[in-house]
Image (cartoon, rainbow, N blue to C red; front, side, top):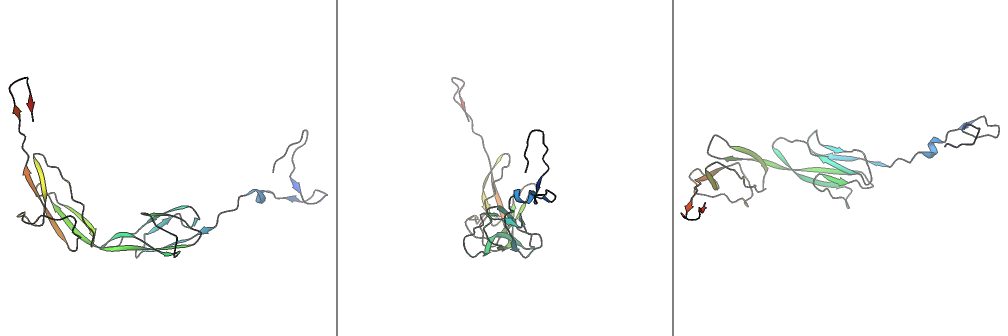
Length: 191
């Protein structure tokens, strides 16, 4: 607490009339600290984190799952509190209670996209039972017709089918042609 009076200097506040014992007023001016709540992650790995941890009610908490060999991340289950908490992606707003979450894992399935040129296959890990995103690839002079489960291109792969086992998909290419029409008048050319 500061004050001013002309021709005087502030010496502080004292508890007795004799002005011999100073009173510490700084504690009275501090804001009370918000109560902190803890976050526990049941992950099955050693490197999962919550940031910040602990956290005050209303604070946004970011979760990061660890790594678990042979598995891929599939979201979070909330164990505590039993109601009212939703993890959106990897974040949530800290409630006025301790939080406990469990990482959900799916068995990892290896899928190889073989482009059938320049030894350029891509390998991805996907959770068992999930569907694949179709790989879009460009190749000069060619058009990608589709992805097939065999090199003879007899079975086209359906990207809405859940993946349940290791899989190799093969790209089928067709040569791209450019056709030019020259009408021989008004210098008009259409490609």
